[in-house]
Image (spheres, rainbow, N blue to C red):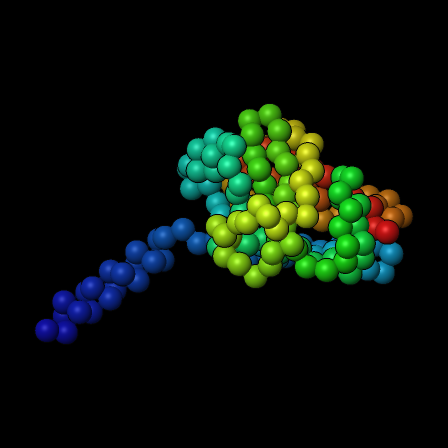
Length: 168
């Protein structure tokens, strides 16, 4: 009687161990003594077609996996022309084959697939380029690019999307 139960539990554990896992990740940068911070989850390709496949064109995407991608800023930002007051936000991406828009939402704390367009603070076009090599795992990076300036970079599969920002 215990043997089938043990086999079932072991089998489900092995399936879980072989399942896709999207670990939590964080990126942050301090500019002018103020922190900009993003929490997200990192899905991997696992041999799948990502953009135009797993992540369809023309639909809002959660910019990661699991919980919604969260932005916290201690400073007012100008993100590619979009004015962002200090505080907490959710980031989404609206990908198309030749253009991405970063969507900044005022709604926070939701699961990644929960999106309410009425909560948009705004949308801004990102600069797209081809990744020099295939990027297996979704990655977001914040970096300083000048005395009061930084760069947001998102990369996965064969795509790199970037957006400059300034701290005000």
